[in-house]
Image (tube, rainbow over all chains, first blue to last red; front, side):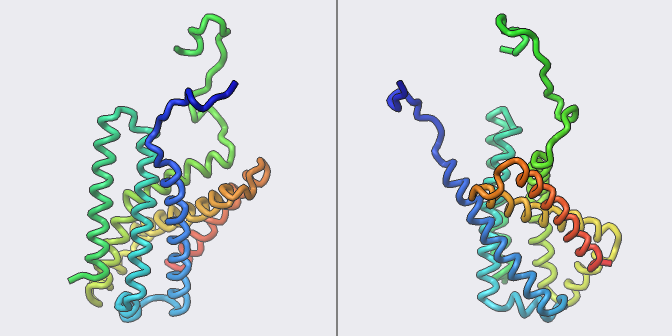
Length: 118
Length: 132
């Protein structure tokens, strides 16, 4: 007889959230990529003036920030999956994961600096 | 316990050398998805941030960061990153379709893996033509 009462409650239960965020961020990045490709094709290439004017618009900055935020969340789930598969010793895996989190957080700061920089 | 040491089992062949196995197309697409993702994280993101930052700084900086795109090495870097991005994007879209139970039986899964590989190479060739 199958009974749920003896099931061991293991895992941190973040699997579904990570799985879903991987996909939602992928859709956001796909839409942004299509938008940027459309803009570049519309202008028939990019020179400095067009490029600069594009990033001067606040709507485009916010869209770009959404893309970068999605990219960094997406990268975290993907890199964490890779580390869980190949970095077997807990000490090595934990160290690498902390480094990746620090790097990705620094990228958030760098993104804000690029978009709304001094 | 290793398989061969189990008393009730006869020794059976175990192929753990991945290079001794002929991988099916979806497996190749899967490992390339992972490899391209790793490359985009390690090289793609810092390159992207650096490139956008410098290119927006001034017309001189814009010229300075776009000039290396005219050199063979610069073109190679851009093409490798472009292929990684395009392949990862297409393989991801295929993955979303599989999540929605579209094309999960063997034949369409094989042909969609082949389509992702071919299409990513074709689109990269278009980028190459634009670069040269």
